[in-house]
Image (cartoon, rainbow, N blue to C red; front, side, top):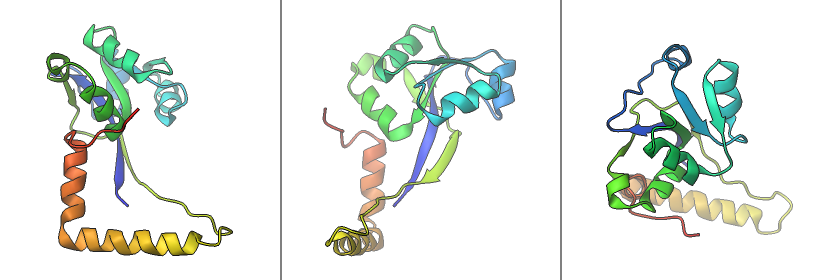
Length: 152
C-alpha cells in the first residue's frame, strides 16, 4: 500500500543527529521506544542506550523533559501521539529527516474466508484508482501532516 517509516522523533532544540547506529552510540544519545518494538532489540544490540516502555506518551514526555534524546517509532503512530499534545509541545518536536527503516505495509485477507478474494480485489481496485488520480498521495500527505487522527 505504502512504505511505513520507522523514525526518530527529536526536539527541535536538541542536537540528536545520526547517520549510523554507531553515531548514536558514540554520542551517548538515549533513545526511548517500546520493549516490543523491533527497534528496541536492534538498538540495544548495537550498544545504544535504550529505554523501553510500553507507553509512547510517556516517552514523548521524557523527550520534552530532556530525559531522552529521541523516540523511535512508526512515523504515523508518532504523529498521532504528538497531535494529541498541546500546540506548544507539538512545536518542540520534529522528525529526524533520516528514517531508521522503511518497509512496505500490507493488508491481509483470509484465503479461507468466502469473501476474502472479493475484498482483496475491491481494495486493490480502489487503491489503483486513488493512486492514478493522485488522491492517494494527497491523502497520505494529509495523514503525515496530522490531517487525520486515529481515534481512541
